[in-house]
Amino acid sequence: MPDPTPARAGRARISDVAAAAGVSVTTVSHALSGARTVNPQTRERILEIAAALGYAPDRIASGLRRKRTGVIGFLGDHVATTPFAGRMIAGARDAGLEHDVLLLVAESEGDEAVEQALVDRFVAQRVDGLLIARMYHQRVKRPTAPADLPIVLLDAAPERGWKVDAVVPDEAQITRLACEAVLAAGHRAIAYADTLDRSRAARGRHLGVRAALGDAGVQLGADRIAAAESDARGGRAAGAALLDRADRPTAVICFNDRIAMGVMQAAARLGLSVPRDVSVVGIDDLRPVADGLDPGLTTAALPHAEMGDWAMTRLIARVGKTEPAPPRLHLMPGWLVERGSVAPPAA
Image 1 (cartoon, one colour):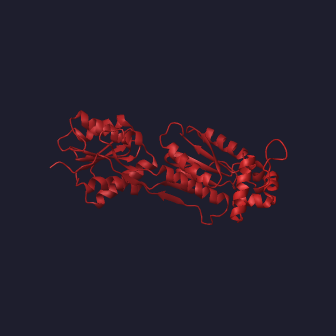
Image 2: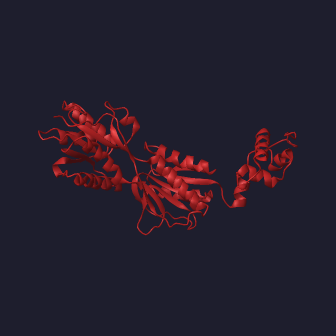
Image 3: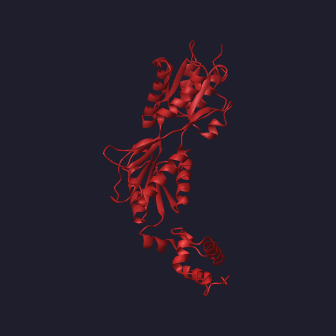
């Protein structure tokens, strides 16, 4: 094999790799990018020489030739303070790496003016596309951006009239999983610990619980619903309202895992054992909560990483103009994570 020592000091060029391998620059480019088929032995030799020389493709020059930067912007509202943000970012990042795309992350903290300023900065950086994420299922206004900039919404739906790809949890399917967990255990006296939020997720889960229980012949009366803040404190208040009564339910489905934690704490304060006296189911699969409770919380998992993967894959297809289908709203299903908080009702 030719001596892979570069002819000059400094960063190795693609021509140095070609000279050391005894092939053309075009062959080296094809071998490194995989854009076209190269003889396997030749490709292996080129990769070995490139590694020995410490050659790395010049992404800026390559981007200028292809009129792309290989960078996707990720704009979230509460990335730093939301426990699920990391899963969505990881899903998008991993899908991007499979296509040699880097992810640039920024956070608006829910401020519309800051969000638009960040969109402007992403455009100035010439990102190939933009992922706009919400940490909870929400509706998003269309930002001011070039008409040809591909955008995909993540855990968010577009405002009316804006045609754009978007992915959100399938709230009806996910809440049905939570309902089926207690129905399958034999429960019929079932309550719902709801949230005071007025988000799309809140409406979707409320309707989903009513539909799933109604399909099973279980009516969810007003006395079986208690709404509170979407945290453990709210869950304790909702749990007390639902359980501190003679005709208490034998199972409680909760809007999220933090409310479920509060409901379990309220049960303990009343001397009730979970799941012997009351079964509790959450929605989220917030692992520090669900795994940390005793017993562990059975919960319907939200597909955050899977949504991130779908959004990035869809965006890359839009950037590469390989997705001919019109923009659509994709409903991503979840799955049930069984732990120890559900059991058949006491005799």
